[in-house]
Image 1 (cartoon, helix red, strand yellow):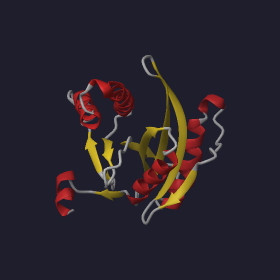
Image 2 (tube, one colour; image 1 turned 180 degrees about the vertical axis):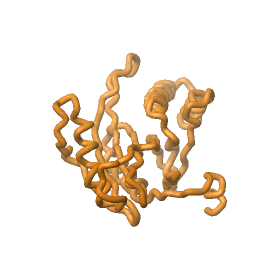
Image 3 (cartoon, one colour; image 1 turned 135 degrees about the vertical axis):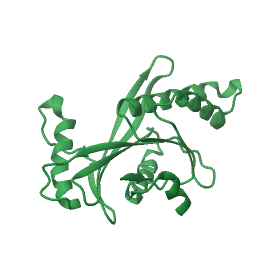
Length: 211
């Protein structure tokens, strides 16, 4: 089933794996910051962040990658969200969201701490959230991307593991934003998007026409 995200405001869908993906990022940065010399550094900073997001999406064979332009009302939205196939959870007792989540949590946590012995240790802000048809494991973290031109770029990354209704499977939504004083607000926004996501069995075009 295809995961449909309720993205608020204005977003650009990047064609992951297509030749024009990087050209779309360049055009996107110019649209956001213009083409003048005064904004050159901001354009470069934005392009670097989005190239990292695209490379991450390509390595993980993401099905979708969305770049935020602005929220409703015009407030800038420096964020990207990718959707990945996720994992099968064959150890779940059944296909109910609770059983899948009970089996998924130790699986994800052990994988995250594999370099440190594989202990299933939760992070301080890890949470299991509940939506109408799924359970969602949220795992936020802050990473520093070292750029040769711009230096350290602190980045908020949030993984959302969403149980698929009626299946022993969980999909992965990965959200990224700069680590700034507004990061808690972006985390709350990402939570709303993940909790509002729904699974659709039809085509993307048919789904858009249904509204």
